[in-house]
Each structure stands twice: as C-alpha cells, then as structure tokens.
Image (cartoon, rainbow, N blue to C red; front, side, top):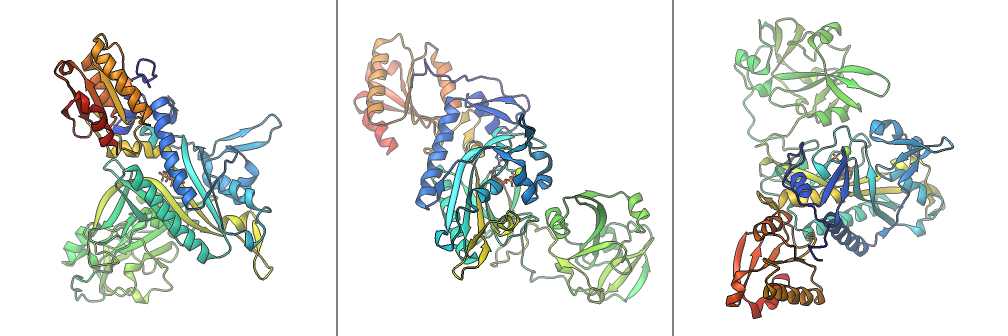
Length: 567
Ligand code: ATP
Ligand code: MG
C-alpha cells in the first residue's frame, strides 16, 4: 500500500469523552471513526486488524471441527418469545417492525436462532455432536455505550453453539473450545487468564470467561498467587480459612448498645473480632412483576457480593432501601437480626452455617444479642454471598487470593437443555426416545479484542501492534521524496518485500520527516525502515516501535535484515 493513496486520516484530537488508550489511539490513528453513540465505522486499517483476528479465530475453529455459518441479523421476535428472553433482555433488544407489521429483533446473540436452525434438521443422536459458529455483527442497545470498541452498541462477535446427546459429550467439547480459545489469545499475543464466571440466573454447570489482563478492565478478578485458580469476583470462592480468630465467651443475653450501629462500633463495643458479628444487608429485590425487601446475612468480617445476592433470590436487580422503608416493613435499622424476623425474606451466607458465639441485632432499637447460636434458626436458607477479599486463602491450594483487572473478551458456557427445552428442539437417542439437545455456547468479542490488544500494547505515543494483529508488518519511510536516491531505494525495497509476501506500506507522502514519524509512532506498525540522509553513507535505519530504538543497517543488508525480523 502507498501512504500517498491510503485512507488513513490521523489526527491530533482525541474524542471528547475518551479516557481509554484504545479509544483514543484507534480513533486518532484512523482505525475507526464514531458515527453515533456506540456505533463505529471501520476504516481500512481497522478493517485489516479485524480480518486478521477473524482469520485466526476461523483457523482455530476449523482445527476444532467447528463449522462456520451465517445467520440472519434481523431475527423474528417469536423466537425470543418462545425462549422467554424478550423480557429478560429488555431494552438491550432493538425491536423493529416490517411493512406487514411483523415484529423483529436485531440479534444481540443467537442462541434462539441457532436452535431454530438445528431443530427438525438434526433429528438423531447419529448426527451429533455438531458445533456451528459465525462471526457476525451484533446489536445491543447498551445502557451506557462507552470506551470506544470496548462497549459498543453494534459490535462483532464470534458466537458458537454446540449440540450434544449427553452432558459428558458437552464436557468434552467445552474443554476443546477452552483449549481453542486459549490458542487464539496466545496467537494474538495477549496476556490473559481464564477464570470461573457467574452463570447467572440460567444456572448451568460451567461458565468460564477469557480475561485480557489490563488495569482499564471493567471486571475485577480474584486470582490465586500460586496456582491456576482465578474467578470473576462475582463467582469467586475461597478456602474456609485456617487461622480463625478465637471465639469470644459472651453470655447468651440481650445487651443495651446505645448508638452502636456499624459492625466496627459493634466489634469495639463487645471487644470481639468482626468475624463474630452478624451483618444484615437489606436490599429491595426487583422481579419482573413485583419486588420485595430481602435481608442478606453475613459475618461482619465479610462483604456482600451483589451478583451472588441477585442469583440467590433470582432477582432482575437489587436496589438500596432507605431507613424509612425498613421501618415501614417492621424492621429496626441498626439492630436487624435473624431471630424473630420472620416476616421478611432472609438469605444466609454459607459462612454462617452453625456459627456460635455470635453478636447479632436484637430487632429492638439500641439492643443487640450476644452469644447467639445460629444453628437454632428455623429452616434458614444458606448460599454463598460473600465477596472474596485480597489475602483470603485459595480454595484449591495454600496460596493467597489477590485482585487484578480484566477485559472480558470471551465467555464459554455449558447451557445444558435450557434453550432446547424452551424451543422444543429434540433428537432421538439410541433407545429411540426423544430428548432435548444438550448445548454449549462459546462467545468471543472480536471487535472488543482490537481494543484489548491496544490496552495491553500502547505507550504515550500511540499503538504498538502485536505481530499477529498489525495491519501491515513493515512501514518504509522515504524521508524526502524529492531525493531520487531515497525514493528509488524505497521503491526497490517495497517491491521486493511485496514479492516476498510481506504486508508493507510505503510512506511516499509529500510531508516532512517529523510529521511522518509522528504518524508511524501513532499507528504503531512493529517496524519502520527509515531511508534518510545517512543513505549518502550507505546506511538506512530500522525503527522498532515496541522499544522506540533505531539502529543503523547497511543498505546492502536492508532486505535480509528486515526478512530476518519477520521470521
Ligand atoms: P459484558 O459483561 O462485558 O457486557 P456480556 O456478558 O454481556 O459482556 P456475552 O453475552 O457473554 O457478553 O457476549 C460474548 C462476548 O461479546 C463478550 O465476552 C464480549 O467480549 C463481547 N461483548 C459483549 N458485549 C459487548 C459490547 N457491548 N461491545 C463489544 N463487545 C461486547
Ligand atoms: Mg453485557
């Protein structure tokens, strides 16, 4: 490609709302251009990167025997009614009507569409397993589109779906997909971690996220400092702990605790570790049709993990409640406790199972109970509600948990029969009986990956593309195109590299050297061959973008040296 003919509109101005490096540099360097909130045009450089990532995904999918299809982007709303997701997805679904007034939805993901494709076409266990995928535009009317390609409304996703006769076979495919996803991210040159994820209200036995490690990531991950274990904070576990504080010996009684409200005040008052206090977190759980106040109880030393709490009561959302609302519900803010509070729904963290010698609210203003034994509660509901903290023990080894930030670039999920049952997609098993397909789903954020590469590979001057993702491998910069010798060498190298299959761009623009150099740094191709004044002395320079180093090379060795860098 000739820079003089290329459409690469670089600019000094960053988008007004841009805070992330990827958003700033991908726009400034002319890879993408925003059209409206969450909508982007891909310019030639951006499109090349997209195609490179897609090619790697396609190769790895083909190696894993997954087959590419392409399903309609406009999807009939009936399918979404069949699965019940038309309500669940809510406003993220962009709905439209055709001239005959039929309702459609722009596909935000394609579970329903894929089940619809397979049902009545795959009818026997003999045709299973099957894994179908596509790389396709998705639309989600995100509440807060932001960070450029990271959270767009229209974006490109690789979405794959597998169909099986048994859960064992799904497990095998899930592992194969995990391995394929791992290879894709390795080939892209990314530092990543595969973590256990929240499976949401759908349940399912396994869900993993592929997280690109970056400070700008929206997800908090709890990872072990010595083994492979890592989980999204929303789904993280810890060991029960070995160094527990010693239990206080307090009488089983009601104690006047004037003005003692917070856990710290309570622990101070009784001179105990917060571990031996019971924390009550009140929330309003919002459901499709109604809502209710729920009390979540944990040890005072723990914090409520909201996603775990949402799942525990299968709510759409949890919102805060005011003291007035609590009082109206017959609760005593600051003294809420699990004994005698039966009118309000309560859920207990599993860390409280069998807890003794506890201090809890007495459901009476300015009173707490000491020495409480939670094993005497009437039919309590226990589940994991706690949030893993840094320093907690790893559930799999003797290591400690630490936090890191990640960008979710992929999500693989064992769906089981949720969708096949809802959409009545069945096959005949080897006994001749009808059964719903056992399914897996495998998503990857292709356009988000472009942003993730830059989040991990940039500096204050611009992008630093990895070998596998760079739009061109080599930039040949002719410093002064009026200098015939410079231009001639540039053209010779350009032809030879092109003939050798190298993706090369020649900067033959009538611009100053400094201007071209700024563009080279901003766009961030791995290597630039600088043909400049030193040509008189038989030398050119090779500029390496990752290190910003320039080194002299003899003209006769230029071609071989460049080929050596690329091999
Ligand atoms: P997030 O939690 O970031 O909203 P999600 O859980 O909604 O993601 P999935 O439904 O699992 O995402 O979609 C599969 C993949 O598609 C995600 O792992 C992510 O990489 C990508 N993706 C999802 N939403 C967007 C978006 N708004 N813009 C760009 N990529 C996205
Ligand atoms: Mg989302």
